Length: 351
Image (cartoon, rainbow, N blue to C red; front, side, top):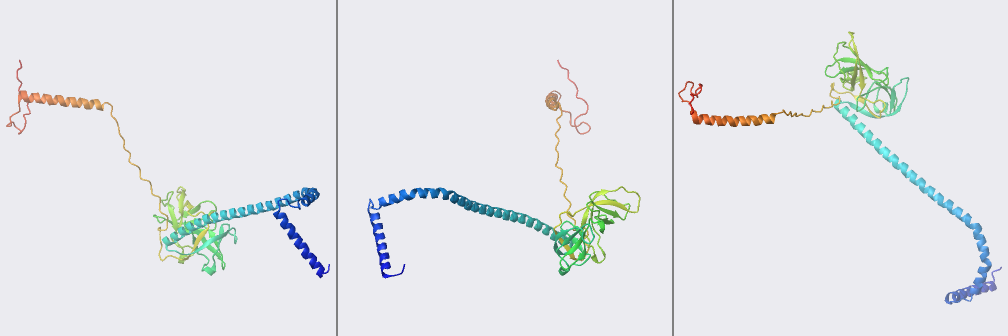
């Protein structure tokens, strides 16, 4: 339809009529439009119900899908939060464990006056043909070189065999190709410790008649120019002593201080000590508990009756002494010996 004057006038009349009808319908209790409304409801009601019967299941399904999607999203968010919380808690436990290892390492390095470069074990395996090696995250860029001593808070870990720019390979003390000179605490007996894989270290003492017992402790003897081993690093404790056979050497088994299956934080000795720390790096020996004092009370049978007998005997003696004093008197002071007469007093005839 063209936009003419007549069409615009018709539109204005329709709008005015609509407003008039709305005003009358709102202000009247009985609207003149009720009949028309009822007629329209009667005509279109069945159609509306039929359409609702068809559309409502579809709408319910769509709503269920939307609600399910929302629940799934909330569930996924909760699962992510739970995983993040678990990771955070695990990270906190790991950080506490690593902090404890680092503090122990620094304490050991301080006791031996070792200048160390801290590193972390990042790989374990048969590298460069060795069967017992680990890889650490420090290399030549950090000042590391081949044949440097590697320790942790417990003692000797091994020595560096290969150095790259940012990583290094460490040969562990448990490797069969590993050998280190040792010195025994107190007795200063020298020997050589050799790795045996997952078993205890084997130490061959140079003195076949050396006196050694279970629990004796060993440290590294040290190498020329402190490479590959610095002196005084704890190695382990004697766990088994083979009987002496009269040979020139004697073999013992030593349990290492380091747990090689739990390596994480280690230190590479980049600066040796000015003097041999001897046994000062060894951990303190556990103090033996003092035995508690024991009090034993022994009851003697008949002691009570014996005491009563002694008391009655004392009373009889006192009474007898009183009677003797009254009847016989005292001995003269001029008796020989300056005291009471040793001879029995003279008896008196009694009626």
